Length: 357
Image (cartoon, rainbow, N blue to C red):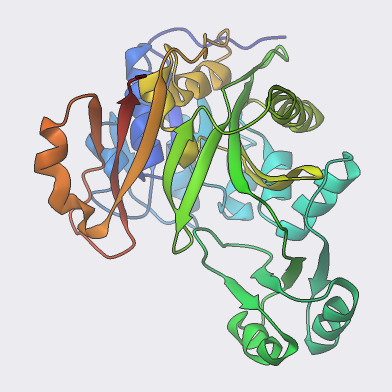
């Protein structure tokens, strides 16, 4: 059964960052209202949403007010406290649902889930102490990366182990948190697939984009990615396999390593994704509208790519380039309204249409 929201309905968004901002804009284009739940004041999404409930995720009264003000709930980041979700899902539908969050919030569960689906991942092992780490190094070898199982993004909560001599410091960097040891993967480049699934089980995937990171932060995504026709098909099919296994509703980003042995799944994010921003310039229906359509019970839109695009994040001092970028041909500028420029902080992005010579 499809629960279709009529125009004029209200969508609640947990998190008030730039993804929530762009989701709110997409919702407004379809005639929906949005309410943001975000502890911080003057957050990017609050500038465009109809209402901002500023409260901590431990504030049960505020969470109830939020639920009562909306018809369905979605989120722009995955590290939502479990207790808050326990309360909210009893009051309103939460899309995507708890299973996708539970798996993606824990890197060990995520790797095990992907492996059980028959998808290739980096070799991995659970690490809770020095004994576990020594056993993981013996079994998997070095170089490798030690990561906290939860609450890590943009290279945070990670430590490289190039040799056994790095192990002690890497474990100390985890600050006593449960960790996962992942062996290095030899790959030529990274790509990601932005995929969507709605309540009736329809799946739509965007063309894979090729990602370049600097300092652990996404710098650019280029479409089309350097993939063979077979690799492109494999990327879309494995993304669909993840969506269907989770009975997912919404948009998901799936990151893949391209290797001679095939595509290796790095991770997936149960939300709209930075590497999908190019869809704002390359498709009739971008990832943000696609997500709103899915959670609202609408048909998925046409995500066919009609242009070659390079998306570039504007990070920190890149804001000094805004005046020039605003005059550049073929460039659409998206600024997030963040008050303070900081090194490593995503302040906006551009989408540049690539003209074919």
